[in-house]
Image 1 (cartoon, chains in turn yellow, cyan):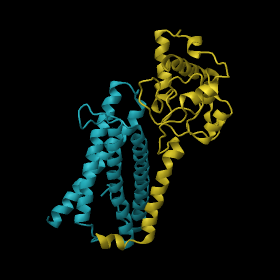
Image 2 (cartoon, each protein chain N blue to C red):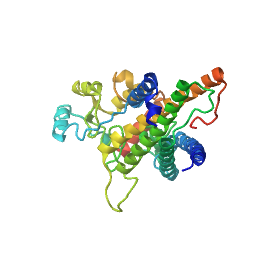
Image 3 (cartoon, rainbow over the protein chains, first blue to last red):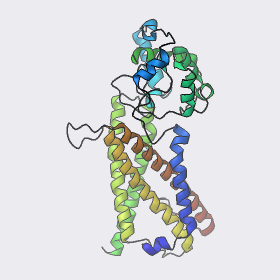
Image 4 (cartoon, each protein chain N blue to C red):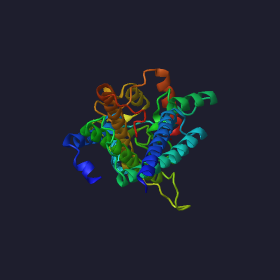
Length: 179
Length: 169
């Protein structure tokens, strides 16, 4: 066995090493995944300091919960489904949901961008936070319609959701489920 | 172990790995399309864990047989360097499956899906993130290996008239 591998030419092993290195990069390139999670990104008092001067309304009270049962099903499908936004694939929503590979969307409305724990944000999103980006129904709508255009260089490597109705259903779902 | 028995066992194990791999590949293609909180999704996830464990065990046994009795180029249809090249790719494929198994078990364990000790909290997001990333890395690694094995197999067919339908054998 030893001779078998020793006799193999250098280029045979070079090919294996190249394939392994390329494979190590692909999850980041394709999914925006990162091999390390940070436990805490910003402390609660730091988050409060960012939004306290903005005088933001309480979006959860403002929009209320006016969906019918049939609409609730459509909203869930838009958020979860393969044909919808596929958001659930990477995002947790409720307080007791386990963190997944993307930041939790729990209490997303009125929150500054790039502050959730357990996630290593791209510099692009951190820059947007420093420039005052706060998640509201309008900014979420703009972001999910074309993530790369709204925050160039961010790690949410998904094609934008072009259908305004689907985006509206997703935002309604977030208003209902993430409070 | 008799050399003939080892060869027979190696062949059977390669086919078993091939079949189990095809099953888990279909499972992986179907699962993301099923709603996350449905019963069907839970069944598919558990099925993935069981079949993935089988793939890990068969691959481990195949590597053991490989180390115990390395393949010999007896048929002389392929030049030695071509023979070694394709076999190193195949050997690394089994190693990738083993690495995939280890990272997969760690991912499932840190996600609270495997409870070795009833009641013990095994959820660890930091470990889940890293082992999940590695699970993805080894997944891409075996896909690229399979692609290269297929390319080399086609090349061997065209140039040397040597072909095997089981790309893992």
